[in-house]
Length: 334
Image 1: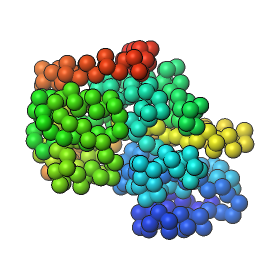
Image 2 (image 1 turned 60 degrees about the vertical axis):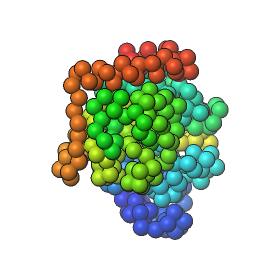
Image 3 (image 1 turned 45 degrees about the horizontal axis):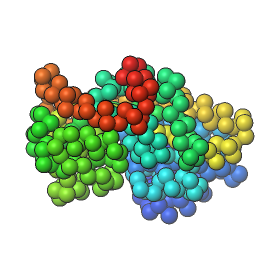
């Protein structure tokens, strides 16, 4: 088995999706089943990129002769709007979309979008290990055929805009890019701003041209996508979690032999744990990288942060019934 993940990442960045697929097929050994892993993140240091490549390396080494995982980063195979459909059609076998994308499949995933429900990533990780958190991995299995393999943390989120944001009222009248999440849209509306859902790959251009005035993201996304270049500053709100659902389809899992299924799931769990343990250091490094590159970061006083918290609390009440009080309480108390 050739070492595939890094080599094929380069192929996917260099060629179109169609030609990358053709080349990746020939890179696998004869008789191996090709497992395509598509995601939308670029660069080499982003937590999702590192985790995806690590997973591919582990499977390709430990399941040599059986499975050949090929990673397609940076929307080179499928973008935000097409990847879930591609998974259902069997055109791709692995994805790692943001949890914010699954509200239409199960409103319970909205718990991850609730502003200020998690104090930090350690708090969020504790929730994913609770019975309620583990149950959510299979929340879409019956109605959509999606199965979660693990939660990949990317970091806490921070607001950036074309003006300095100190209080939520500073965002009044501005347009903010958000993911396709009703919770996220309500959060932006609570600030007196206008939510604009769009694909991740479109955000830099939208900020640059003024289609939107601001966005919310992790240090790693803000740095690797250079959002700081087209924003006045970033405010260290630490308001929300960005996490990805490392996922596959029920059809793919059911197609594996019992032994291969167990080995595949064990590798997925181990890579997930390792990835989450390393995220905090990567986030701190990319925060420093933003400052080094000339980006500006605003810090909040305790009083200012409390104003943000108070402004967002009504969002919890609005979605408590849809998400489920048991899930919200489990997340808040983890």
